[in-house]
Length: 155
Length: 155
Image (cartoon, rainbow over all chains, first blue to last red; front, side):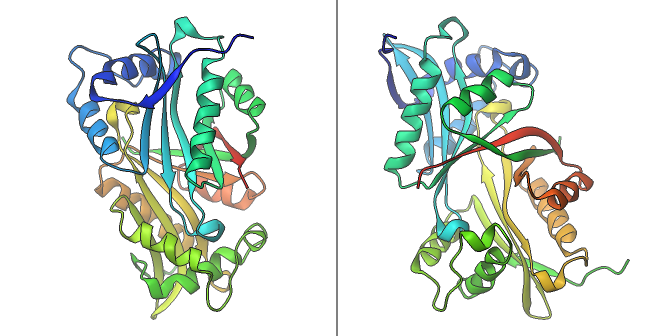
């Protein structure tokens, strides 16, 4: 197994089209994103909120100057677990043309390490039940599917 | 069905012992909380972070001046869903001696309404698979168990 030569860093505003392209590029994402040129303004305003909040880290994986993956880390203070900080992982994507190269795995391991640095006691995420490969992927990384993830759509 | 006469408001520092008592008072909570007098300092520092962050609302349900329920609402900006804001519901508890009085239901309906006021497109939560009654409770409120909730403990 070769180690992928990837750099992880905070996303910049100019990365947003690459991020939205990856979010839109799968079966569930294509139904809910609008990857257009220019991008709808709502993406930029969400990005600004994320960028200005130290409890959010929108990350990109970069190789040879090209953005090939993304993950959104949310650090969530909570009273429960003795006031323990949690990390929540959202919006995980690897560019389809670079899949099966351990990039997702490297990105998640980096994210778990980042969570440790910030003193987190638990990393949590939800995956759609239909994403069977994703569920297995997270189990291989040590995640336990101990919970149900419930959603109530308001729109 | 009588309507419970309950007021919902932001938690104050002085509410923290009542909140921790409720968090600790069930099978899973008793294993992970420390309801002591005085409370461990970590609870207060978590409370201060939550209180100072406008994207967090730690709520208590009050009746006749007594705290009988709690819920932590987290408002999460995200790039996905066209930059849509989510609400996450955590740390839901009703005082055991007041259960089966529709208090949890009133508290969740209030929370959903609050999420609508803030322009949220989806309310999300996870429940432990062993909390069968909780799962049914959320389904009655309209939540769909579409996801798996996965956790990786770091401590």
